[in-house]
Length: 79
Image (cartoon, rainbow, N blue to C red; front, top):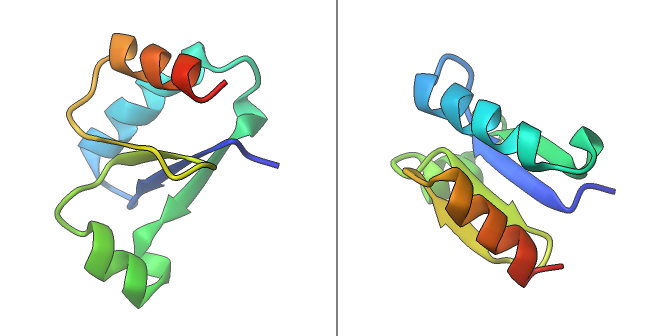
């Protein structure tokens, strides 16, 4: 089960940057679930102007722009 969700959409260069920043910080890449917001009207309404968004399974979120240090801090707080 993924501990983290990255809300994104295909073709979003900021989303690609976020993914490239997050993956090296994970202990296991399978802990990251990618969710394309275009797959759900509710997600579009919620995140359309905010993506990329990194969300923990506990509901804590980081909105772009975020740094590797901020991601590490979130990982530490939710461990």
